[in-house]
Image 1 (cartoon, rainbow, N blue to C red):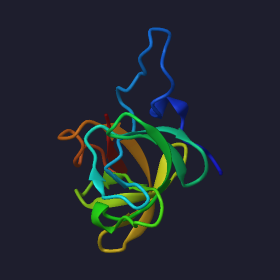
Image 2: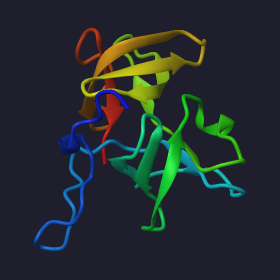
Image 3: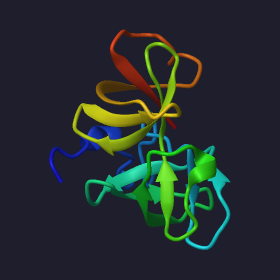
Image 4: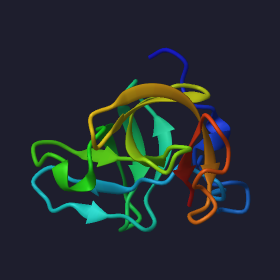
Length: 141
């Protein structure tokens, strides 16, 4: 699996008070369950990493399931198996999608099929565009 994502960037299990720490966790842009319709997410997030491209994600209906990370726009998510995407904003405001997460970097693909590897940071929507040179921004929940 290589270098997995730091647990501090994932929404872990509930704390002793019964609630999970969701602040600053990696947001899921959209997901598509096997045989279901695409869901443009407003509350889904990554819970844990199970493989280089397999993640347990928290869904809109508060359930959790294993999904495969795909570096495609939400409308291109396949219907054959559970798939999800994570959108990034590059420092020049180009939109891309994460192909693979590493500890502090990601491999991405843009809509124009450009690829690359870049460091990433987690930011809230609206504060994430062009904030730091040579760093991609990922929305948080």
